[in-house]
Image (cartoon, rainbow, N blue to C red; front, side, top):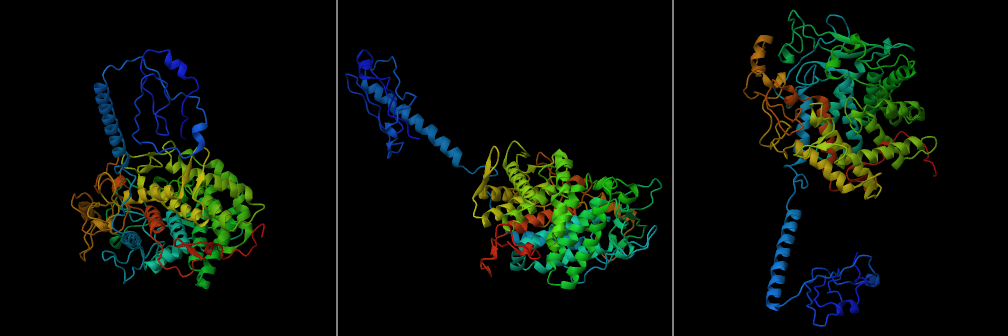
Length: 630
């Protein structure tokens, strides 16, 4: 605000009583303040401050802008020299300040690393490399073949569990992370299918989702389900390190095509509420992806409803996590120890509502299970969306419903709560107080986890997705309790995290294999590290490749490795999986971030339906209710 011309305390009579000359301060209007000195004042106007064009000059300030100095000027020549030098120094300081301010700041400018279309295409190819079962002949991944064809028929089980995905660099198939991956990839298609179609990847991503959903249907055989019982298969393969050195999926470094050891199956009952909820979410979300294939879509919904009916009616004292029971968990607790089940039931109920339009599922999600999810959320998981915590993402979905298909009573309390908490999470991503960032700009959502990139990727996805929601509402930003954010700030944050992963980091390394000129070459991955030369390798022979310091003979295109530590340091060593191992759950987050950030098609087929490449109303296609207030 322009300052006043001076303080009433300084009058001409005051000046006349003093024998000293006065040097007066320049007002914010750019003029010398009035003087009543007997000898002429020196007017200095550098035109640094624009001339006042309003009436604020008439408003007296409570701060005096004129100061009396007990100083006598005896030689105008030296005084002018002093003024010139002082002004020159001031200009130099101002120039330095402006230079520092406008120089490119670390982490604040984001130049797209090559192109996101290539990055996205490669990220999807990683899932092709993880496929188990009869391997597609037309796959672009040439170092993979048929594997796991007898999964489910060895040792303790006799069921068809062929298919699905190997979880990471080992040959275990975890149902929990497979379901999470299918849910997240399906969500991206529901929101951004126009973008996928525009770059020619829609059928590709749908093929990946169907590969996963086909497998999930096998985990829940309907004929084995009764009104109070259920069978869920949670894992194929073993991570146990047997004392007798019996080969298994951890101590044997072998391609899946060469496996000939026993692969036990872990089986769960009705109390594996988290696993059931995640599978319900996956089948429900996938049904929306394949809505044009009515038969397949309906089959997914029917399986999801049957599973949810049993899981949601289990007495609360018997509900729990699948990793609580040793027989159910297998070795999953070593890698994916679930810490709660309420968020998965909330997640599953919400997606089942979208899949069916049946408000009873929304009732379930927004009543007790929502509050239980909030109460049970670990402090270290707040604001984090990943395989173990779905509350943040569920709130985004409920907020989406409030924004674009508000159903009013009796859901408004949970809808408003979800919106407020979603806004708060977005603020926390941008705040320096809530989450720390590395010197290179990577957000540390779970700094003690050791796998930094997976959390940053989903944060990038949610922030860009939410910015698109706000854009559809023509909102430029949101105010939080102590701060706020603009749509552009959210997008800038999202880009900063994705571009860090793709190479804009202190290591100058793309953490997605095959992208750019510098990326990890010793990825912790059995198939990638053993030559594809037409001959099988035993466990002992494979160990040679595991411990080799040579680059992998096969490039695992599109795999996002675990990533650097909290100091931006990264070691490209195969024997250090906490740096170099990829997982399907992490890559799903990367795909989500990349498609959200990808440019929308230039020519939208229907500008009222699509905006920014996002399908505003498609997720509500099965909800045939009139919004409240209509």
